[in-house]
Image (cartoon, rainbow, N blue to C red):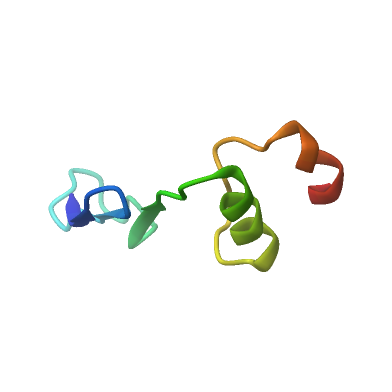
Length: 65
């Protein structure tokens, strides 16, 4: 279910309490943050501010490994 939405900033989806399968989904929420450029996206990953990013620029692959 849609939790919170700030256009161009972030989108949060939350668990549906009326989901048809008991105990699912297990995550209470998923937060999508929109970063304006590659550098800020990679910095968020390296600092632990985010768990994953959609696209890793080829220049940062070695450093992230």
